[in-house]
Length: 284
Image 1 (cartoon, helix red, strand yellow):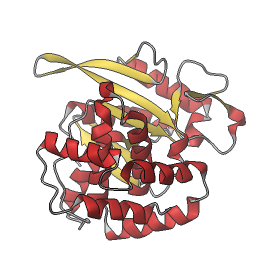
Image 2 (image 1 turned 30 degrees about the vertical axis):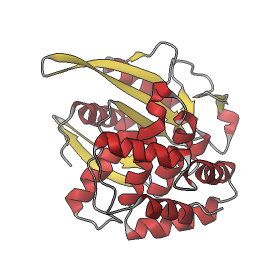
Image 3 (image 1 turned 45 degrees about the vertical axis):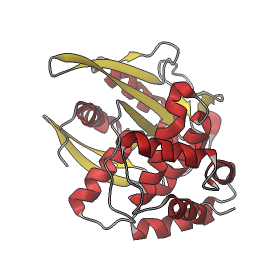
């Protein structure tokens, strides 16, 4: 799949430079949805509902598998490539957020990479707290601790992307994993005006379900059954009940606010249907 935007070009170059170090990149967040929508439209696979335009984003949320964050050689290679590409650590978020300035249309634009990591089953090779995780023996790069990424390495969708002179393979999380990540993000931001009250996370949840295929729906039900006793999945159910358990719930209101801001007509996939489908995947 050909990529033409500056954010995607940065992703392809980063992934290509990391191939020899065997550091796969799992693309979450808003850009993960952008890639997913483009792939589905290209392959013409039928989804639960037609795909709406995906919101613009300026960040790359990159998830690292547990075996990557635990391996110092992988993390050294990642830091080396970020340095070579002109990325610098974001003050206050060293060293799991990096930014560089790209020239787009003759003007400078900042592109940010946010590193997040699945917590490995064997924690002996990592140092971690509630905010950061890194391999023992190497301090120059971390990732944001993401216990909610418990299934992020399951049923990944590989995508081969090309941009300029680069070509590389990246991976998209399964919709079930994306839903968990977005449920937690909505919880964290739904009362924070500085983060847009989490409206874009509520809309991303809605978009993720719209873009689910029949096979992915079945697999999501199976993944819930497999992981239902995991603390992160149990918490996702509680958040779903609190924020998206009714038409009047706060998360539902955030979705409606986001839809108004974007000018989206939700009548072909009513909010009640969305809430019901979410409850089917994450039953109480």
